[in-house]
Length: 124
Image (tube, rainbow, N blue to C red):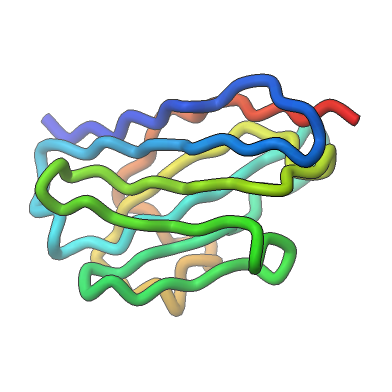
């Protein structure tokens, strides 16, 4: 059974940090790109960051320099370290896996598999 389990969300003050985890099982983790996405109330889902199987990464402009994506292939887990959080980072964060390259992760077709989402709330 394919599973993507997102966790690590919570309530944090502006300027604080959180680390999200996306634990994967049931598919060949090394062959997939893993992306992090977020959706705030009333807004469309947006791509935040993505990591390919070779370790190459992409970031949305809004999070560059503040967020870091990393993969632990031994644990089949991808992390999103978030620092200097802002109220506008408040959203439900999802992880997704796909065999296509991260170059296309912000397209509507990315995501063979999706996790259930974890809430991140940043207070001002």
